[in-house]
Image 1 (tube, rainbow, N blue to C red):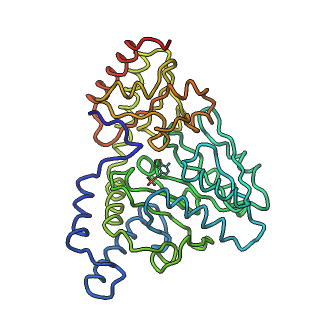
Image 2: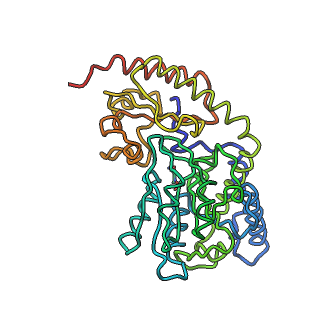
Image 3: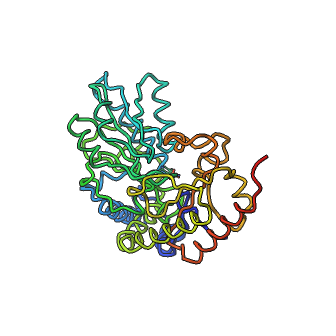
Length: 378
Ligand code: PMP
């Protein structure tokens, strides 16, 4: 099977596995334990935290809180800040219509609890206009949450420009960088964000571990009490996971620079081949501000779910993995103005570390010929 679904998840890099394995089988002590093995585990946890801190350009180890993934990090960022503000009238949150479900569902939860939520629009490329964020801010606004890069259409947002605005108004800024971290060199201070979400399984680490960067001094209420993670997140830490996340980030720092252009070039070659075979198809997302490994393609007249079924030798996606399987067409494609019929005719191909030219050739050939031989509906 040719795997072109790296935005849903990635394989664990062998080097990441090698780094984490000893912490499953040999150095398994709880870092909170008082004995020697416990202290060694605590020291390994400190080193992992320092690596994550360095990779994100953060200043203090205590600004990194490990979580079970990006979903939990997003929940903690939004619920934690919304409920921690010392001002009782701080009850307004700003977000976008193309966020991951974990952000949208959390905002929805807060809105049912009496908060007001403003959704700033995106243009037909899925880009937020920072001026729209400025207009939406009121004296009640606590938090702006805008994802760094989108999981379906790959669009990258002008986070630094949005941060300049939130800072001016003394409003917190959170960004979900789960998709961005694999492709972009992220520095929380250059970006100017207060909170930033990452997840290991999008960057060749295991599922079930992620982190939230919380700028020192940001008011944030833990969602359940406990002493771990500087009081921000209770429960025995997933030490092997933290080691894996740190190693995945360390590898990215050395390989991202040459991987990004390689993957972008393969993606462009895949797009060229598909558009040559299917001249009526079109690409979604921003032509210039897009993740290198993302290709969201609408092939009018097809049913994406049927096409995926017809191609058992390809692992591709319709919409995002989280959204597919639902009858509802993608909220991201709707927000950029695609009618339902086009949203249902959209596939997402995402490339990664193991993708080679031969994979691209195979996928383009199979998709091109499968669509050409499928009789039109009706
Ligand atoms: N945010 C974005 C942008 C994502 O793409 C994903 C994964 N689909 C998540 C959050 C959730 O990440 P996790 O699986 O680590 O909870």
